[in-house]
Image (cartoon, rainbow over all chains, first blue to last red; front, side, top):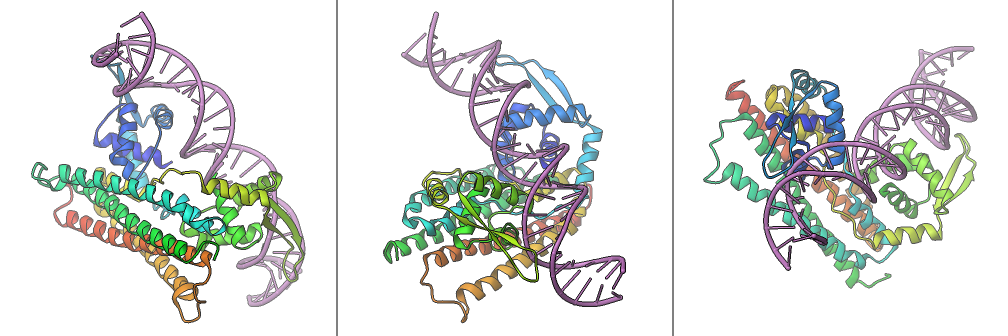
Length: 188
Length: 188
DNA sequence: TCCTTCTATGCAACTCGTTGCATAGACAAG
DNA sequence: CTTGTCTATGCAACGAGTTGCATAGAAGGA
């Protein structure tokens, strides 16, 4: 049910349409949550039916009309209730790690390209996060930190940056290990 | 479908029952994948029906009988096919990060206990991983690294260790931020 | 003897998430 | 004037994952 809460937070930060939410989930919110537009539209519909959100039709020029969603009082209360309820610490689901252990029963060297591809994706994400940090928080254009929400968004972004850095360093470790195994002789 | 592959890898490393698999998923494999026993039993049944696994009834003394599963030729081939197919880099789903951003619309200081609780869980996991590393890979009792599988298991464990260390450091950052906001005055 | 704990397996119902498909307005390029 | 791209919304089907419940043998303690 955490998608509900992620939507509530995002709409409290700024009201928007399902389409806009989907784009946010690809970007900033994508640091810590993902969702497709189909899922978002379905959940938005249910949340309106439950009275957590309000819809407003917005006419636009040069593009199709949209529906703008915003959070109601009960929606805010539902978020607050969730915030005060303890949650389970998350656990990872990392396909690539499964592949790495599985490579013992195949050819480890064949994984090198795949791992390098993942490493590049994480390097790109890191660069993207760092650019966002400079733009929104630490750059000369960024506003002085007066806002609580801004501080909290920044600390979450720092988490994303730390995660990408850690992952890149680990993938370097993985690559070194795979190269070592390759040099030691295939099938050894 | 990645649970299938995680099960194949685990059973190739050592054949075992559904119950044993569930315990492994709580422990070592839990570094990178989680699953409940209900899910495991269901998937095991399907994989046997698909010819990827073999079952063998094993009588035991002092405890109920069990079914031991092992990987067939087609099972191994299915794993190899997956290993050679590129996968999408994973994306995080981190509820706590949603909570942190959501705290801007509630009381940030109220999150401190929750974050400290999570930090303790991650410290415990780190200690557990480090003990396992000493026991199986770097301690005096550990066997010399002759096995490819052992090297790969170790590099995955190092990934788990790096993840926990990074997470603890980030949660320290989060706590410092929450304390700073609290000191700056609630409602500011 | 009863209660609890550990080992061991499983069904049923439900929710969550993914994939594929479909529609439609506006604009730009060829 | 057709094709492609971007904005914008949605259905249907399926597969993955969670939650609650149920059963049962064996051991140990109250």
